[in-house]
Image (cartoon, rainbow, N blue to C red):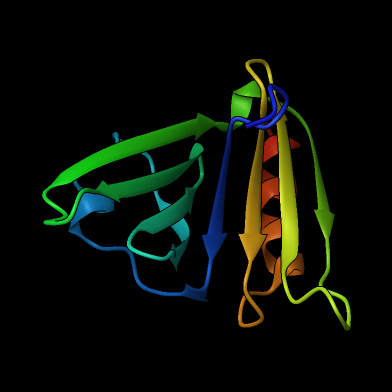
Length: 122
């Protein structure tokens, strides 16, 4: 793994947030969007991006990643092309960079608008 990219996740489709996400929200925090990943769920709230990373064969162990919007210094979005099937969101934070790959069924511009609206209002 390159030092400038800490983690990368793929969002496949928009879904309703599940219990894993809802039980860790703080007062005043609301889920704006939620996505299915390979074995996990991710959510974009009005305060952060959360990824629940299910681990192991049984899936009992879950690691929760939280990227607060206040730590994002810059971000970029790239729509999918004809050959490249995934769109991407790159987050440049104080501790490193994160990449969110988006499947064909995920609207990159919708995510772009949500991230912009939250970051620009911090």
